[in-house]
Length: 209
Image (cartoon, rainbow, N blue to C red; front, side):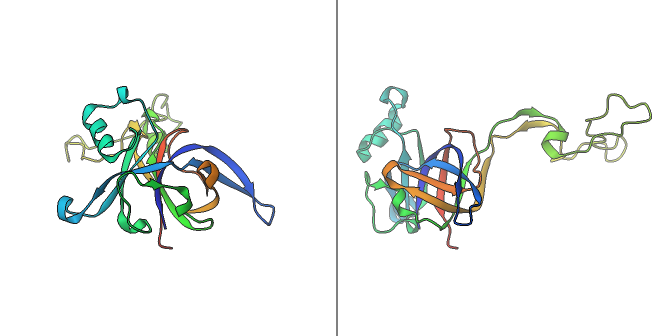
């Protein structure tokens, strides 16, 4: 069981004992440090706040800079909270969170921000089929069709699938297997793709399976 923050490096492949190519995502998991210990008596719940990376103090606002200094760690790029049950033993502010908390073969879930696609039409965004290609229709090939009757209901319902911004959503991919762990370089390889572009930050959490 474990939980950690990481940075997506890219994808590669490994070969198993059956000589099958296994697509893997390489994640730089840590080094991370506990930036705050939350308790039920003070904060209403128990959790560990974990930070990753190290950035210049000039690029961190004063409230967050004071928050990091109180924990005795360098300013990071991202912080996230994890339930205390995900960690073995009791941690304090400044304690390291290492990739060794995971084991090869266990199942994890990875959460990240998906790639931004900008404005997209209904064909790309919602897999619409578009209009028919015959009977004189030359400009309706990728149109959404009717979005609401003129007389009844005389409106477009909220939530109707239409064109708009696509991507940059919080996505969680579950049931990913840890294929390989390299503690000396804080790398973890999981089977399959994870959300987000290269160099984006993700959350890796063990599941109870």
